[in-house]
Amino acid sequence: MFPPCEIMIREFLPAMRGLVALELRKGGMSQSRIAALLGITQAAVSLYLSKDANYYKKRLQSIGIPLDEVDNLVKLISNDILEGAVKANEIFYAFWKEILSKGLLCKYHRNMYPSLSECHVCLKAPTYPSVEHIEVLRDLEHALYMLEGSSYFVKLIPEVAVNIAVSLKDARSETDVAAIPGRIIALKDRPKPMSRPEFGASKHMARVLLRVRTVKNEVRAVMNIKCDEGVELAAKKLGMNVAYTEKGDVSDEEAVIDAVTAAFKKYGELDIVFDKGGVGLEPMTYVFGKSATDVVRKALRIARSYIG
Image (tube, rainbow, N blue to C red; front, side):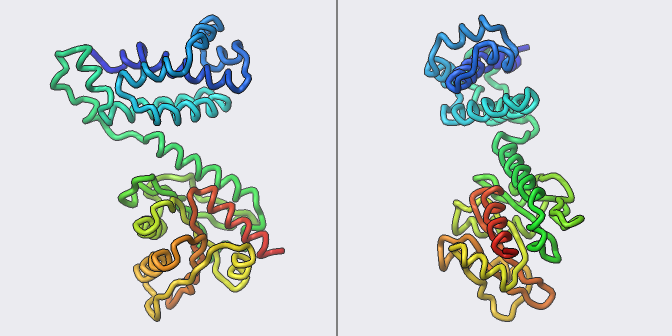
């Protein structure tokens, strides 16, 4: 029996502890505090700090892990560990399962144990949420926190309610887009999400986002809010890049998606696309951005201007 967990204990975990210790120390944290956060002795922390970051990065690179992913992981863990061990473990273990499922450790593992030359166990394992999945969901959670604390936003909630959709960088389908199941409604004069964010939770918003990204790949998030003259004036007053859909008398969902995408083809950089609706379709404002927090900040700016 030669499980890859051996590589975690011997190579991956020590190198990551070293990099996180260096990152925390760089922020001015004491060795005793670092020891408590990492669950090791102060003497062990001192030993980790006696080597530089390149030493640990070379160890990780030698087992097949790309350094750009390591840098991102170190920053995430260093931030998360201050909020609790569970949160840090979540991101750490998600990354570990991701590199296993990608086969990044296979060559190193087979060199250790040539008898594993025909092994493909990790590649056949169930797909787990990646670090990017967790980052997207956390972005949405933070965006919801911002909304729930802004009672004035309820003025911009349309009859069909609000949703926010965020895609993975290489999203291909609706399952690669996270949103709010049941959407965001007005409850006791406060914005209230009906559920917590999850992937594959909104068909329409996911389709809008995926189609727009075929034209403007930098767009990672979209949010819908009410569309009326006051919203239009507020967005323009704030200097946002706005456009209107041009779909004639057609008023089905597919026509709206086509028209929103066409606006990006025509104007390029856009924060807002207004759709005047049609028979059976409520007028809607689509707010676009690079993240959930980005589109919520834009929506809150519009809401403040709208009521003020």
